[in-house]
Length: 223
Image (tube, rainbow, N blue to C red; front, side, top):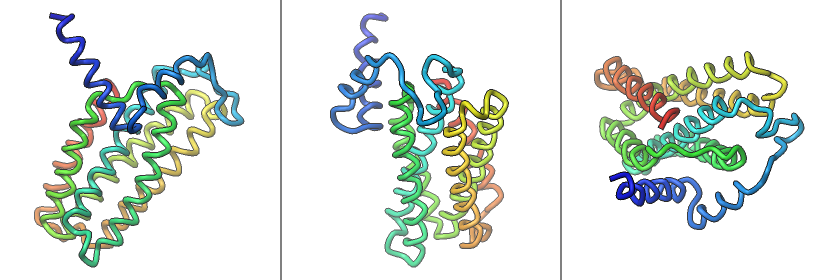
């Protein structure tokens, strides 16, 4: 049975790589894995002197989170892109695209296996974005507030972890996470400024989305 399941597992992993990196990614991943070490900018951090399990979890889940965020904004734009709030959503989405681009780079640099749940987050993220946007701009903004509140808290937890581990060694990774945390907080405030709290059943909607975010974080760190 294990032998029969192996091709399916390899196919799923290959699909995740295509989602992360695009065509030809399997070859790029293979070439990267042949390198013996790397130096991360000016800090001297290498694969040999980092807490690899902790860094793997951080980069895997952050990559998945930024991927999911991109799909949420894609869903919102599919519904509200031609409305007055479209440019606001697009601006936030553009920042999320930059975040995902950076984590696409880090996941290769640190040789981290992406979560196998990317195909699921692809569909679920778009459905969440489009579904809340169908409630109106307030619903879309309520989704943004809920998600960005969860993600900024998650980034703060990672910052504390890296600071306790070795703030100098992980200096540049900390700078990246802090910058992205600040962007998420800005998106949170934009959502509030654009009527998030006027969404139907705002408190219930926010709580439900944040429970989903916590589950996604837990799973993406591990699977």
